[in-house]
Amino acid sequence: QVQLVESGGGLVQAGGSLRLSCAASGSIFKINAMDWYRQAPGKQRELIAAISSGGRTNYADSVKGRFTISRDNAKQTVYLQMNSLTPEDTAVYYCYADVLLTSLSSSIRQYWGQGTQVTVSS
Image (tube, rainbow, N blue to C red; front, side, top):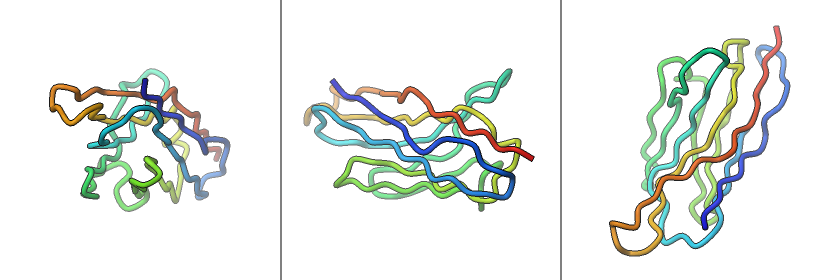
């Protein structure tokens, strides 16, 4: 089994920063893309940042310039550095990973973390 565990969420004032971490564990051949999503009350879950196995990144316009996604392949961990936070960033943040369980391409699986709450106060 593969498990993703997020950490680093919490309460922060507007203008502050948080760093989220998501560590993967289990029987893993390779982790391809790793993404961060968020879901605010009454809203759809949205993709906010993505990083490929080679380190290529993409961001939603709402967080571009403020958030930075990175990964440490040796630690099988993805990070989200969140700066200049606003109340509109308040949401549950979820880690996602495309995981290759074996060398066979048919072994690709999708995994989600349980989510971590980020609350930004004004």
